Structure formats: structure tokens, C-alpha cells
Image 1 (cartoon, helix red, strand yellow):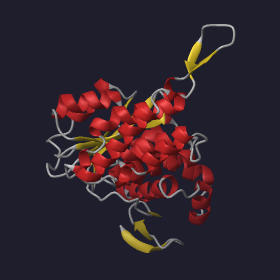
Image 2: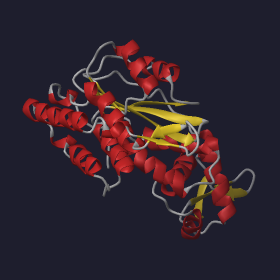
Image 3: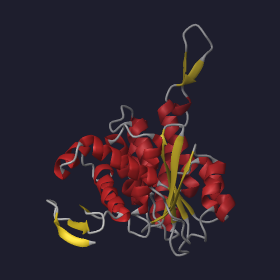
Length: 311
């Protein structure tokens, strides 16, 4: 083969004296990396395929075909690592297809540790997921999903388990609204808003005492019932207030673990740094098939194995 000038794109053209033909050499690995970068720009950076096609001077259908080929070939290597015993394990799940497919994600404070696709969040799926992770973490931070709680206990034993305060505050504000109409709601919202300020043993005790006073003061009020006229059917009048009370009461045993152990008080490093961007990408690309969505998750999380989570 002899060098025979270049193409308009600057690629070297080769000439064969035997068959009297010329052409360029294509490396499959280089071509795949090229289109893999295109897929990243499309899915992760949010650039439209039409814009990429115009920029590269390709037909849109050709770009779509090449991107589909890359997504079909995405292979994830063994991304599970040995846990650092000095760091906590942050756990959360994100729905990819509602009630059909969820990705379970584990990270520490700096990097993604492991992820897995499962049909739903329950004890079996979380336990199977945790058994694929080697080592013992310093503690666990999660939203305390029921199956997750049991799986952590089975897999790691009785280790410090911090309930994510951000989830508690977010759900409580949703039920109470930002401007409650009753005095009991105003007082409870004020307590919720000061949850993150309780960082020492003294401030935690003060918060718990104030909450106990609130529950005793409004205990009878929260028992009020409403009846369907002409029947014996009834329901609690202040259901959302009762819901917030139950939410906080059930979370109390694991709400302030961070004050006695060196672990975060929220799962924001995972929720905001990984799940949030993933949900945004899914929203931008609603037409992706399930398999392509899984490939997207693999690409997205593979780039964050061993790298610090970025918000």
C-alpha cells in the first residue's frame, strides 16, 4: 500500500499497486469511540441529534442509526468495588420505567460504587444488590425504604443507618404546604424547617423535647374525625398533619445518627449529583426504548466510577 494523497476531510488515501484501487483505512475501535462521544453529547450533554448531524454534515437518519448501534453495544465491565471502611454507603433507587424497571445505585461520598437494574424495590432486590458489594461501610445513608432497611440489616448487621433528612423535610413541606392555615401546622412546619440545624447532642435534645411538647399539646386535636352525613363512615380530619407526625415519629430512631457518627445527614450526594441529572436526561429523551435507557444509565454511571460526584 502506498500513500496516495488525502481526502477532502484530510484523511490519508492509500493505493494498492496490485488491484489498482485506492481507499482509506477504517479502524473499527476509533470509529466506535467517535460515535460513542457523539452519543454522550446527545444523551448526557443534551445536544439534539439534528444539531449534531448539521455540525458533522451527516444525514440525520445516518446519525440516528450509528447512535443506535453504539447503544446496542454498550458493555459495562465489573464496576463493583471494595468498600472503603472509613466512608459511608449512600443508597437510593431511581425509576427508569414506572413499576417495571428501577436502577439501584450505591455510592460513597466521592464515587459511584455499584448499580443494578431490578423490576422493583423490595427486600430481595436490595439484598441481592448489596451482596454484590464487597466490604463493610462506616455507615449507611438512605431514604429508609422498607425493603432497603431489612436488606441493610441482613447484609451489614446493626451498623449506623442515617435517615435522609432532606427526604423528610421535602415530604413534610409537600403535605403541610409552605403556608399552613392552622396554628398546629405553622408550629410543625417551623419544627421541620429546623431539622437540619440540630447537629450537636444539645441541639438534638432541644429539638426532640420541642417536638414532644408539640405532640402532647395537639394530641386531641389530631384525633378529630369527620363523618359522612347520614352514615357511620369517618376519617381523620387532619390526615396530612397526622401523616407528617407519623413520618417524623417513625424516622426519629435514625434521624440524628449523623451527630454521633461521621456520616452525612442526607443522600444529596447521590440524589442531587446522580439521580437528578439522570431524571433530567430521561425527561429530555422521553422516546428512548427501555434498552436504550439502560444503556444511557450505564454510560452515565460508568463515567462516575472512581470519580467524585459532581452536582
